Image 1 (cartoon, rainbow, N blue to C red):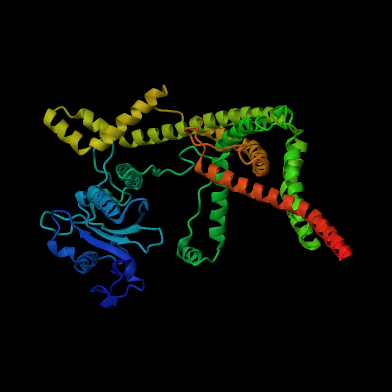
Image 2 (cartoon, helix red, strand yellow):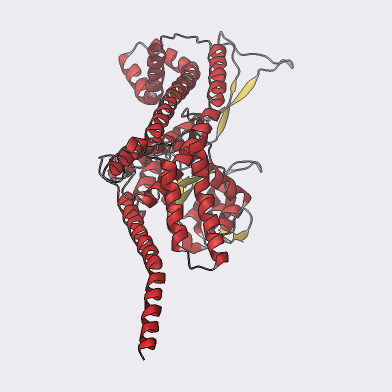
Length: 521
């Protein structure tokens, strides 16, 4: 009852505790609530206060679990109406149609985190809406179907669940079905984003690190702009993941940049051979222009600005010298070698990651087949066509899953039982090999970062060089805006430099004219 009150944002009376439960939360965040009932549930349970008081009354043990609670994030790309239809359809298929009462609360505080809280009943109901027992007892039988006596001479008995809602398999099933439901809704709404319920490890992505859960306290502080340790950790994880994910894209951009340099430099009459043009001179020439522009600044301001520019460019110049890159031709050769190393590295890593993913799938298939084998054997023992069809209908999902994993084993040329120890040993070895490749990835990233710095400063001197393009080959909007800005900045810089160079001569002419006038007078 306290949980329902908190999610609802209103007080509710608990007959079990004989007291009002207060929400202690902002009711404005509650966008929608609904108690979703199966067909055999009493209509009175649409009132959640009546529902959860009835649930409490049905439990006699003080340690009884009265409800199962979910917190489900909703895709922020969808509208409120689309998300509501999505979650209601999901709850109907996964919970209500199986006999559970689903108490749904849609929360959205407008901070980009729409989500729902679900409370599900734990007991089944009969056709009259009466709560049924969660478990029953049965005799323990041996392999011949005979009852077994315990050490005290009494028949052994065991507790059996009357429903399988607590089976751990549903953790995977419900997550997978939510993944499918979201992706179908996103596709129907025309969005490119997709959801994957699997962790990076299960997807075979070992070079990306998952973020950690903030928790309510850290999340509240972060929303107020107050950094937290967990928030800083997530920001660092996002930064590292973004670096790794951009490796291929960055290299493609740099390769295109080289072609842009050659084409742009060829258009300049002062450059007879673009391949022999010194890239270091491009960077230093920009520093010279900036220095000339500040000629009439105060000495301290000049020094401070020059040091800042020099620091920004010196790393790039040092990098070019360390790699013995002095011309466009040499840069092209270096990029070619880096590209070949990148391609080979990614091919090796991808192959190992794919094999790790295959091993995970095979291990999961082996476990699932083992778990479902008794059910499948029972299905094969049924001889009556009608009974077999009814059994197949009741266990359609399990039978399909069993056959799917059988096909997977056949695809890899394996048969039961598989050698799990051998597969796990191979997986561990592959994971170590992938981890050993990480320093190479970091080294390539470091080089690409330096090359991007060179690209930035070269475009300051030659604005239309090194263009970045879209997948279709057209210049990107960002490139066009950057080129226009660099062109304006360069033209203004040259104008100011020219005016400052002419200004002293104009002053000399003015003084000479004034002197001659005075002599005439």
